[in-house]
Length: 429
Image 1 (cartoon, rainbow, N blue to C red):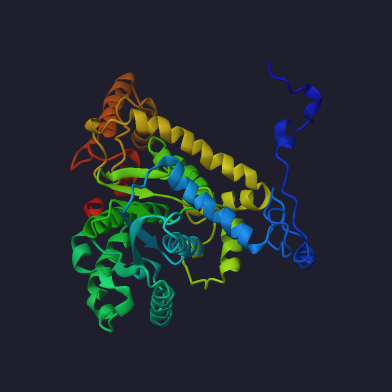
Image 2 (image 1 turned 90 degrees about the vertical axis):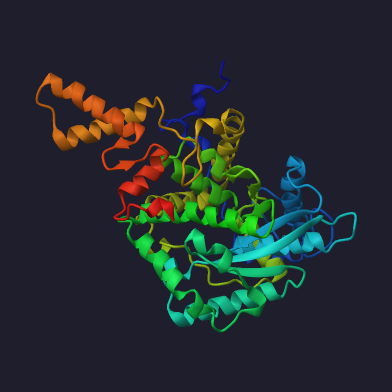
C-alpha cells in the first residue's frame, strides 16, 4: 500500500508535491566567483545549476560535455568512423552541439570522438519571411560562425521541394553572390505550397516533418548514416505534448527518442543533447563565449496562442522556469514509451507516405467516434436508419476511403494537414 499519509496532502490534494524552484539571487554572482569549486576546490565557482553545487568553468564544461558523450556512448549508437551530418539551424543549442562535436574531435587519440562530421545549414528564409537585409546578414553570420570551425565541411541547403535537394546544396564557406537569385524561384514555390494550409498549426506540423524528410535526403546525398539534431529536454517535452495534441500519439515517442529511423532504414536521426536543459545551454554559451545568431522559429512571432505548438511551448517554458524537474519527467516519460514502440513497430503493416510513422487508424474506436461525431454534426440524425448509414460512412472515412481522394496510406495527423489545405498535392512535395 501507499506509504504517504493523508496528512501529507492539504485541501488542494497532491499539488503540494510540486515545489517551485528557488529563484537565484543575481547579487550572489560576484560572491560565487570567490567561492571554491565543489569539484576541484579551486576559486572561481561562477557556474551554478539548479540542484548542483557551484562549479568553475572547466568543471562545468567537463560535466556538460560528459552528458553529450554519455548519450552516445551508453547507447553505443555511433560506430567508429561513422559519417555524421550535423544539422545546424542557428539556435543556441545547435551552436553548442557544433562546438561540442568540434571539441570532441580535436582531443587526443584516447578521448577523441571518432566520426566524420559534415555541417548542414537549412535555409528556411522562404517560410520565415525575413526582409532582404536581415536575410543576407543572417547568412553572413552563419557563414562566419561555421567558418571558425575549420575542421568541418559546411554546406547550405534551402528549404525547397524534395526534387531540388541534390541540385541546390552549396558550399557555405564559399557562398556565392548569385545564391539568392539561383534559389529564389524554388523557395517561392515551396512558400506557396505552405501558404495553402489554412491554419498555423498545420503549417508548423507540415514544416517540422518535411524538414526531417529533407534532412534524410541530404544525409543520403553526403553518404552519412547519422544526422545529429540539437533538440534539448524542453524541446522534446514540447514536441511530445504537441504530438499527442495533434493526434500523433502512436508515434509521439519517436519524436523524443535518442534515435529515430522512421524516414529511412539507412539513416538515423540522433539527438545527443536530449539530456541538456536550457540553463546548461545558456551557461555553456557564456563559458565558451559563443556568438548567438538571430534564430527565428517559424510562427513563434504570432503569439503563444496562435497554434497548438506555440501554446505547448509556452506551457513548457513556464514549467521550465518554475518547475524545471517536471519538464524532465515529461520527456523521460516519452523515452520509456519509445522503447516499447521500437519493439512493437512492424513496418510490414505499413507507414504514412508523408511522415513515415506507423499507420494508426486500423481498428481505432477513438477515430471512429471522432469521424461519426463530425458527420453527425454536419448531417444530423433524423431516423434510426440514418444512424447505421452514418456509422458506415464514418468507417469509410477512418479507413481513408473518401470520394475523390485515397488517404489509405496517410496517418490521422497527416490527413488533418491534407484536409486543411487547398492543395491536393501538399503531402507529395
